[in-house]
Image (tube, rainbow over the protein chains, first blue to last red):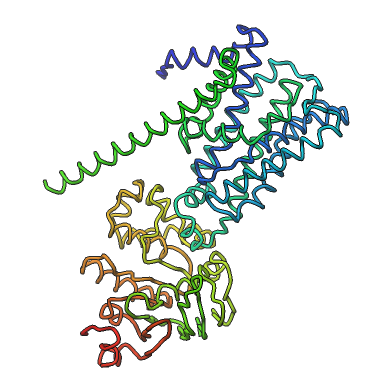
Length: 310
Length: 238
């Protein structure tokens, strides 16, 4: 059997696998954090890329996942591993709950609804954080999982969540119905589909991925900061989805991870100026994508007219 | 009685569109609803389908009151609707569009494949282009896809809003034959809204004419064709 392995693919996989041996721990932590945020960005692609809905409350689900790991450890001395295993379940429940409230709304109403839900829950968490021992909104509970383990678990989560999402979105009825909701919400109602149920289901599913990402984040740093769960980070993830390519899943995962890593690096030099860079990237990529689709639209139209005249 | 619409009043904001519409559709019947532009024909279908709930009146399907029900439940009950606009999913493939036929999940895989083959036999271009995006089809082809994806589903009553608009005479004749065929072979009742009275009357058993939000004329298709009242109400020569 003659199997050829692309040397670039081979060396990339090798580098990813042996990264813990080559990188210092602080850099490995940054890589893991970037990949975790990439998973979070991809979780939003299910709702935005497939169902066409702007969900600003997704970071709250990420936050619940992170809090699950932290509070179980602080209050009940439950090991991080167990909290980590529970975080997708918590994400699923919170995602379904947000979905139940927001799913009757469509398009911009859905966006506004989730934005304010995100803001309200964030505020409640901020007021409540003093009562549970985090005066400034920061919990330091320490992690009992080695960064290498988190790194490999994150890699596994990247691959696993990508393949599960891809399988469900490409091969299941759920994927077709979500795309149909994006394309023509009224038409799909005539097919006997309860679109609110499907929207809620998709938010629960994507919530379980976001919740697990939150749990990983918490387990990686051993610290959670309530300010991390502001809806502005949902907005950032939505923007990264646009840059990565809607409905591709791997685009948001790769671009989300890469730009988050860049953000960590550039933060040292630019501070909040990173947002200017991200903003410019979004503007350019959206403009290029639009020009690209227009170019193909005009070319196809021209080719059709040539074929007709022939 | 399959569908019984009794004295329905529907509003768009303050505009009183349907002002007491009453009619019925019997099992196995093709009924057409004729009328000029803006008399409330499409609103009648939307009201039955639950898209614009009536403020007054009753709509019964197989004796069950469905007025005010959400569209997906009405669809599940066995009413299928093909709107006037080409209601397809443009960024989905032809096959994905077909897979979203009403209540397709209720039937077995064998029956689904059999129905799919029937549709492909009727419209071979759908099979040839099943992996293409629906947006790449021409206007007429998109209309066929819209109807085909409805025909694949399971239903008892088909609501059709101006199905012949924008179709060539050849395709119109094919559509007429197809509607007659599903009516006779499967016993599916059809409520057809049309402006092209002649084409509609050719396949319908009965007709109603609407004017300014009310039914003003009712007759069998045969007698309607000879009626002077129909000509004057529609302003057409048959």
